[in-house]
Length: 323
Image (cartoon, rainbow, N blue to C red; front, side, top):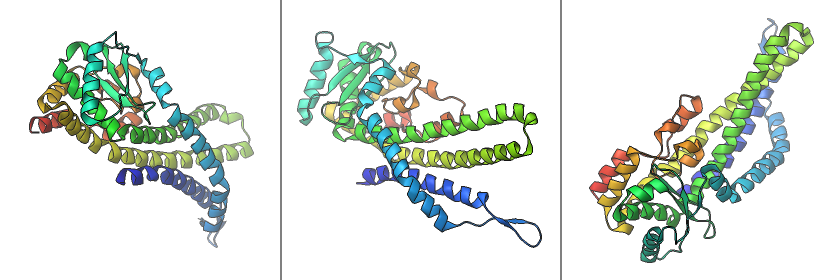
């Protein structure tokens, strides 16, 4: 129930961002001069609400269409981004035997199994329903973990599926991706306008300069609004995901019957985590261990690091060893 309430926060944040944007435009776009010649700004809430109601169908429709395409096309997007391919039983019967034993133990349907050609170690679960639930592993994970450790990792990923974590995470990824894309677009528009507008500004007349300044103000207001919305979406994603990693660790340890094996696997994976080459922070949210190589120096990278979906791996290992 709490996770569903948190998911409802995403569209609330989106609509709130639009209302605040319109309110700021209304506030700074109008005004009058008082008796001392100072500009006095006033917020006309009625006008803001009117334009908000007019914009709402377009916002809801656009975001809804974007969400549906991304939500139901997530399996293809994940495969395309990671280079994952189906793992045939004859190629690695060991994995199928372990997964079948684990699924029979907990009474769940067999998910699809994909593999990524990566000599380093990592794994993740994805999908939104029985037809798309998938556990993906790297070739390095299969080569360097023993059967007990591999069972612990696969049990962790199967627990994510059993708890519907993958559906929740993909939903949050889509919404964060929408806000992130809008933020990048507004930032690039502002940067390009300042760069090229500034270089050519000397040839503009007063009217064009005034229009340019007005457009810059609109972009700055938009950038602030979308930036605040982005931080709130990260906080919501953080609230959804971090606790569920601990729950998946506990579920995986219980499912495989050996918490120390999962702790050992996490220690090995954290020492050489793979899939960093994918370069997608949204995809990395699904990994059992986040590759540190994705943590760059940009503002978005720092925000993603601050609101990381993954708890500290050492703490996860410590709790498993006390399980």
